[in-house]
Amino acid sequence: MPTDDIWTDELGYVNLGTSERETHKEETKRLIQSLPREHPEVFEDIPIDPADYEAIFETAIHSIDGDIKANRGTENEDMVKELFLEPASESGYLTYQDQRSDERVDFKGRLTNGQAWAMDVKGGEGQSISHLLVPSNTELLVVWSHRKSDNTTTPDSRLNEVINRMVRWGFNQDENPALMVIYDPPAGARTEDGEVIPDVVVLPEYLPSPENPNPPMREPTEMEFLRILYDVTIGNDDLESEEVQKHIWFHALWMDDPDSGRVQKSIYNSHFGEDVSLRTQSIDYDRISDVEE
Image (cartoon, rainbow, N blue to C red; front, side, top):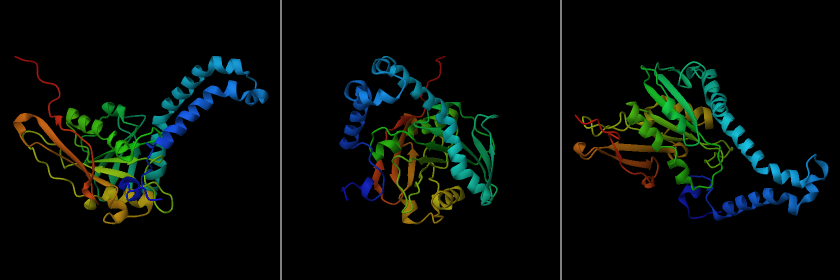
């Protein structure tokens, strides 16, 4: 049913930030907490009585949460390997090495055109990106955000909340990430066959600096990695198709006044242009000043 919302109607995302979903979440929480009082029959066939349930409820919830967080990183990396890297390798599109036990980057390899790439997989907001170390001969650096959380946020918020940390990391570490892949099974758009369509944020050829304040944007239709990504994940290797273009995002960065130290930012959709954009703010080029003489 049309909602007059371009994010759901045209781009195909699931809006997790609706009042209905929020109501269902709260009702689910209330149901779990009120089981001993409102549904004591549940305990008739299990070796725990209602009083024990109430006494250990919070401990059990924290334990489940801890297990989920402990396993999430490894699960995300295994999913990306199974979903993308293994079939891409089997199709002869690329070679890859699983570096998780040896180096502080998850995967690296080469495309069939010889381009050296490296990719790190993050879950949620990618907080562990600060630990990433990139091979010095990397020509294409990719960060993959594999989302599994059902937190109630709108589509634009779910996209936006994983991007800024990567950009700040790039400035702090003097690295130039080329692409951020956002793979979001709970809320991402899907093909007619039900396959999740990855969103890809394309960054400039290098991050701006006072010496080079206006970096050119990369051209996504010329990027072999993107062609492989969409071919393997949704069976569409036409980067100029509407299906793909709707899920490519340009992240422009530039400095209007290099002396000001402010980096301007704009994130907009490849198909709709500035008509569909993400909220973002300028940032400081140098976040930490030198010690005074």
